[in-house]
Image (cartoon, rainbow over all chains, first blue to last red; front, side, top):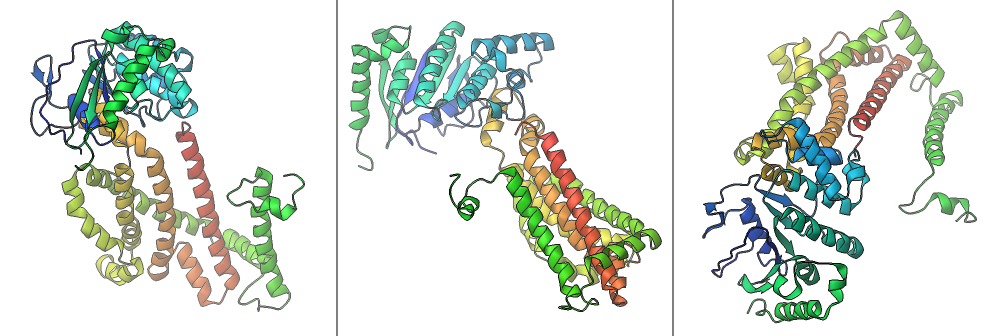
Length: 241
Length: 265
């Protein structure tokens, strides 16, 4: 497990889309997993609305790059699984929510399909719908689009951003793709490896606005931010001294 | 591709094969084997007392079935195999899962199981007879011995291979560890568990014949061993044929069950 050594403080306001960006082994995934309660920090504190994070629970949902949905359940059953352990909802309400979130991610017609029969991009949407239906306040996404082809990635990025704004969800999105981070996030945290630390904290929304569409990718400002970050990553303190 | 020479089309490294050709190749090999078997005694290559013709074996099978109660012996053998197999499975599945779920249990049991796993079952026959006599207990014990310790480790491996992501997904959806085990891990490991059970059932037949040869007064192993004593090679081969057929049928049935249970794969 990579070690984030340098002391730092990071506050993420509710409803913000934050991207953790950096090369592999810089500790960005570990930090996100700590937020999810899946790893325990050796020092320091992870607070959710002032309360210390213990183990994992429903308030922070994970979307992994692979094995993100259960192959033995249909798409709709996968989304229902997100609410399986909620005792405060009636079965009818759960079904209603499942249908709603399946529609939201554009899978309304695929409820009865099994994950093996749908594309990788659709499987990731299933995981997103499941996490939203579960009622998670924070979405933790670990390179969820890493295994998809470029075109599908763009499509899902636009969709994820739309869903996030519609549902006002807090998102922590781990990626090593600079363009993906800049396009998706309100704020990009750039990590540098060895010693792992936070190198920059860039407010993207202040420079690009909150609305994101594909044309934004061709804008001069998008390009400038991208170049800035690439520069930063390239001139990170050299590995091993 | 169509005008490539026939051999070139049939032998494509890691290539595909049409369904009909695949079936044909299997049938042709089987037919050739039977043909060779029929030819050897008929042409005097091998004396019929060592290798009776297929027809002689079928005749023996018929008389054994109609007059000597072969079906009863087959039934007894099947019951022994399934009895020991179920006993092994009922114990091995939970213990294997526990071994992978709790490091301490795995660490405690693995060296012992690994040791017993390498003891050849025939080597334990005398001990088993001393302990249990020559009744059903000995047979069940030997079969159980041969399968349980292998199966435990296979189950533990199946459990270990359940992706960590499945557990973590369940946890972040509010599942407790036991809930993650029952509603996620068991479902995730089910297909490979079924495969391992099917393969282990096959091993049971190997040990059954050993057990029935040394300590039995009925069952297919006993029938084969008795026929040997009278040099009734046709009956020996008929008995072997029945075991092969039972194995083939039960394997195909379990495969069909696997396909029906795991349609989502």
